[in-house]
Image 1: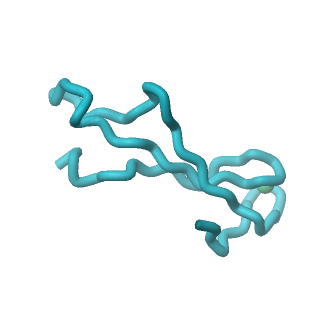
Image 2: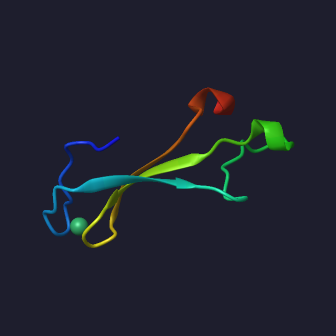
Image 3: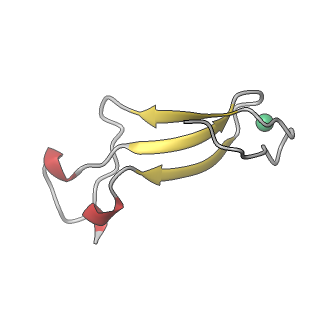
Length: 63
Ligand SMILES: [Zn+2]
């Protein structure tokens, strides 16, 4: 999924989406266990590598 974002650093309009995998999950503090983790998704400028936005895939797990 490509969004219509513009990189604030270099003005590039090609924004790609990345996903942190292999143990780089965000986990709610106090809730231990692999099933509580959520993948981190990032919108990344394909020109300069700037990360425009980062968010977890399943935010309701952090309630
Ligand atoms: Zn950029």
